[in-house]
Image 1 (cartoon, rainbow, N blue to C red):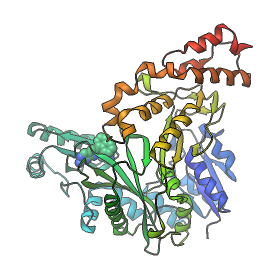
Image 2 (image 1 turned 30 degrees about the vertical axis):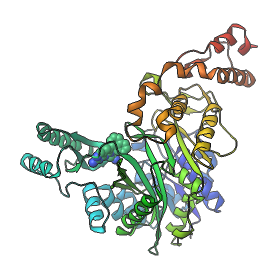
Image 3 (image 1 turned 90 degrees about the vertical axis):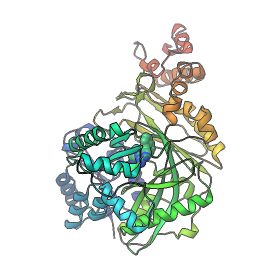
Image 4 (image 1 turned 60 degrees about the vertical axis):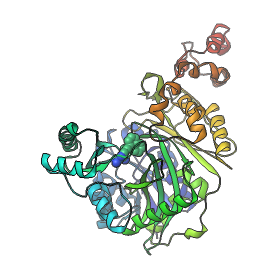
Length: 504
Ligand code: MV4
């Protein structure tokens, strides 16, 4: 039995876990760094413990501190969220040896999947289709030349200790092979302390499609369908949706089966994600497996109606998964947009600072997983993600309409955000048609950051913002920095100021 869970995380995901704990009658324990004294997760948990300075290397990443709090508070389990210690094999192992349930896979599974070469080997042995390429480390220049010629150009050189796009190199010509492998190796050594690299055939303009899986300790594994995650910028996901517009029922069935095979091959217990690359001809290839709950899990929850955090907790406690594969189906369409504190018009420069006002969207089909409130200062130490806006409709068209409506009524002042950039994505021809791949943002960047889109369309919003500031009576006679949310200053705002609308 699990009666009390320590959440070794912060921000929106800590809150997400607290919600399921409360619904299940489980006590929650928060931890917080110096920078998070005023964070919402601290208030929402049943108990909260200080764990040190703002840098995560001195707080959220310190295993001893987390374990200490678990013991002090009498927590019988730890939920790691995503990031931080969520895919740390040593942490999973330490929990086990301390008699604390780690809500996630064993250290063995984390290690096998964390090492990309060993993951490839496991998957090949299990009959999962991986990207054509090598199984082993490339040791020297001669080997590099021989192997790359075997696989055939173009190829990707990847760090075995990498993942998520780190330590990756595209090699197109013979001349690039040796310098490419050498550069990949030194990058991998510098980044991960391990210069092991392997070679994969380059997949042109791929889709990034991932399958959610769940395993329990009774040998059951199910999948909860796919998420289309091709809208990315520098390997950062921006918008995710499910079902994938690319998917056919046949492909879904076979990729789902492959995802289940992948999880079964390692006796997976918990929630996991199997990532695939899919090309235009619908060839699919296993890429990597993430052994954690992912940021974009809510869209799966919306269309399957399964509470993934509840399932994680239940299977960690030794219970069977509540669902049989044949009971599951995707109902409707769900889209997640990640709201970041950044300025798309200034090369996406991070924009931390105090959130003056936040007006969150409400209404049919809206879910908003966030943690920021008016007056909150977004710390510079952590991820600049403010929240996740998740909308669900009966079909893709309705989901897109709702997302546009939700973005329109979502107002944050004090920090710059990517809200209008997100709206621009939804307005683009390629996104609207569902005909896009991982090159989408790069291919459409001029359209996406076009200046005019950042002012003229939003006059009404500017008026609303002025009105909210007036209602909140928080003006101090200085120029409102709210204008900075725009790339161009709205004429309506300057009108408002001239006429004194904001300073009545
Ligand atoms: C690839 C690829 C093409 N061919 N591997 C980038 C992140 C990492 N998880 C794997 N990545 C890629 N691996 C082969 N053999 C193209 C990418 C890739 C990509 C993948 C998913 C989402 C966005 C991407 C953007 C650029 C490149």
